[in-house]
Length: 533
Image 1 (tube, rainbow, N blue to C red):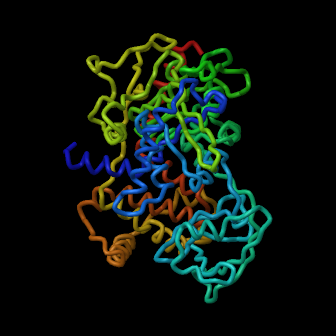
Image 2 (cartoon, rainbow, N blue to C red; image 1 turned 90 degrees about the horizontal axis):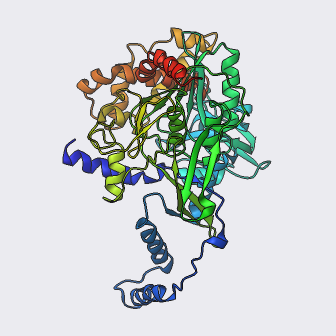
Image 3 (tube, helix red, strand yellow; image 1 turned 90 degrees about the vertical axis):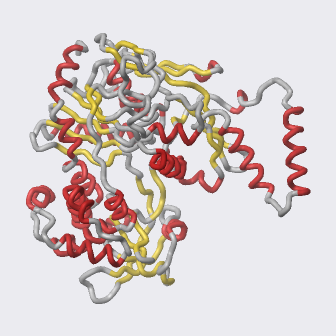
């Protein structure tokens, strides 16, 4: 990778640094937060600098910004995952872990300054009253929503359960807009994006996107449904799953491991941070062959699950080396409503591996190298310096630098041109357009999935939207990514006709990396036998 490309990558990763979610750890309380030694003298130095800045700096400065910056700087000296969460960000953070919020239940984008429904959330109030993908919300409680920002959408459409909001809807095919009243309700934020049977009729597929309070329950429901459809083997997709709650990672691993086996353990400076987690007899999941898919974006709780499956020879881990986050955070609420997420322990896989990557070279390198195939995070070589451990059956695995897959798969890469199509919502626009034309033509989703093909109209329609969005067309990039582009358009058509669950099913169902993983199922069967299960 060139120096320029690495610098660009570092910038982009730093811009999205909050995507790597820490593991919440709740056993350490406030009474253990204050050291016994006298810290007054150290604080005096900070107060002295603060006073000089406030009094003499060339421009007036806000005290709150200075204090927040000082806190952030303090935590940055510790490790990449100890962070300060401002009060205004706490609601969103809490939602991600709690797995729900209260509102009208839509996925949306602001497209050309118009609030547009991507999909109603299944089971939510918007779906119940017939809101459809592609609907434009042109008024909210009698006021125009043209030019609305995403932040304003949250303020206007979210609210307590039982409260009401009136929206004016413009829908393709109808000559006049119409008004509906929506009663807000509790809306789930799903951890599980897709679960379905592959075409062989015996392989189940589950895509888990995060670890929140509802994850274990969602997974159990999906497993039971797939077993009822004849599942005899499983592909469990943890790609780009950045983690979440430690307890949920343990519960997920527990579904696949017979009772009495250590799944993960934590060790910290204080005794309250030390714990060992063992599998129980709480799941009736049969011992079927299993593949776990990971990539560079798999971190934290997803690495706990992958590490347990690999160390105990329960299944085959495939893909690319995971991110390498082996630190455990405790989220501590502060008096003003903000929070401190502080690293209090390290976690270790059953074989004793600490998979945390080094972070001595600074935050930029830490995040950039986590996604770099060319550094030490790539599959371990004999001279890599990474410590070797053994699995339950005696296979060699490595500590540090993430979870190295048993079988490496080549990740699908798309061009910068195709990336720009996402940023301009062109896939969504095409999907909405084609979806309206296809409505009522298919007896079921399976009928749609097997028969629908993106036609010859794609290229001229794509060029039209590119011109509208002032994006230069690249024939070379289009030819390279044509299959991927058509798959994304088909997925958006599925969302327009059905919902986001079916959108994700198209995305993963036509994923070449999933196809490659499926071909490795005989290896998963061998590992299951080697493990003595």
